[in-house]
Length: 149
Image (cartoon, rainbow, N blue to C red; front, side):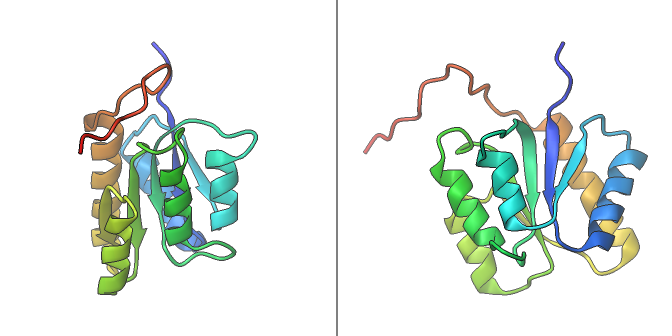
């Protein structure tokens, strides 16, 4: 049995990244959580020369260097990451961010709760669902999806 795939957290706020890591550890998620501090670093991990597989991505929208929206567009445009689950985890309550995220292929959109206990519950629930319950197909050798129009 292979070890669980890593999870990528794309988060520029060190406090949110540290808290998310602590929540994952406290809930015994065996997936390793890697943190990218900006959109460029995320794209290097996802699409770069030394890209690696991830179980899912938790993506903030307001990032330095390259925005979360642009990261999502590039992830969806690449055949190797097209079906990778991407969960938007952001403080933005802008309707435009919500709509644009889903139009660009986000699997879920979650606003970061402000209260500590609500934030930890939300992150734990996301981690448990996407790491243990959600199923994604194995893309090794799988045919590319075709559209039926």
